[in-house]
Amino acid sequence: MKRPIATLLAYAVALPVSAAFLFPYAWMISGALRSTRDVLSDPLRLIPANLDLGFMADIARIGGTPLGTYLLNSLLFTAGATVLGTLAAALGAYALTRRPRLPGFRLLRGGFLLTMMYPYMLLIIPVYIVMYRIGLLGSAAGIVLFLSLGPIQFFLFEQFFRAIPPAVIEAATIDGASEWQILLRVVLPMAMPVTATVALIAFLLNWAQWFPVLVISRGPETYTLPVALLSLNTELGASFQGVMALAVLTTLPPAILFLLAQRRVMAGMAGGAVKG
Image (cartoon, rainbow, N blue to C red):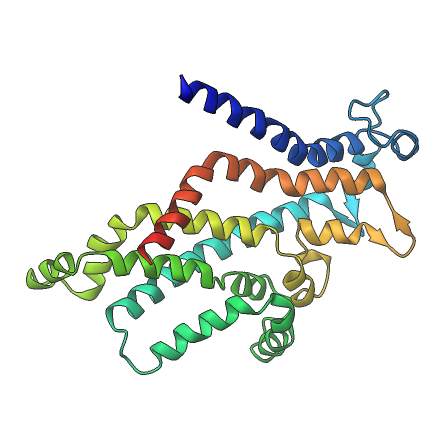
C-alpha cells in the first residue's frame, strides 16, 4: 500500500514542477502565433485569441540570407563536429588509456581538464589567431574543427576504456592482434553504448553554440540558427514574433532528440561517473 501512495505523491510533486518548466516554452510558442500588441495587452495568455502568422515573413530571410541557409549550416556543422569530435575523443582516450606514460600524455590530459574550467569566451582570441594563421578563418572547416573540441566527451571515453578488463586486451594481444585491430574489433564494439552517449551529448552541445560561430565567421553564409536568432535583435528593434518563432525552431530539434534519447544520455553520464 505504501508504494502506490509514494507514487501518487511523486506525481503530485513532479506534475507542478514539470508544468512550471514547460510554461516558458508554451508561452514562447504562443508568442510566435500572437501579435506583439496581443502579447503586451495579455502577456500570460497561452491560447491565442487570433492567430497571427506574420512571423513567417519575419524569419523567411534574416539579414538578406534565406532561413534555409542557417538551418542547413546548423545541421552540417553540428553533424560534422559531432562525428569528428567523437572519433577524435575515442582515439585520444584509447591512446591515453593504453600508453599513459608516453611523453606529453599527462600534459595533454591536464590540458583537457584546463579547457573544461575555462569558458569559450576566454579561448576565442587564441582560437581566432590560430584560425587566421592556418587559413581557416571564415570557413566551414574552421567552425567544424573548433566545435569538435570536446573534453567532456574525451573523459567519458577514458573512464569507459579504463573499466575494460585487462584480460580482454591481453587475450587479443596473444592472438596476434595489432593495436588498430584491438581498437576496431574488440574495444569499439564494447564501447557502442558510450559512443552513442558521447555523440548525443556532442550534438546537443554543438547545436547551441553561437559565439564561436559568430567569431570565426566572416559573413551570414556560415551563420547557424543560434546566430540568426541573435541577428534578429538589432539597434533598430526586434521582431517579437520572429524571435519567438525562430527560438522555437532553434530549440525544437535538440529538445526532441534529448526526449528520445534522455535515458541513454543519463545512463552514459552516470556510468562514466561511477566507473571513474
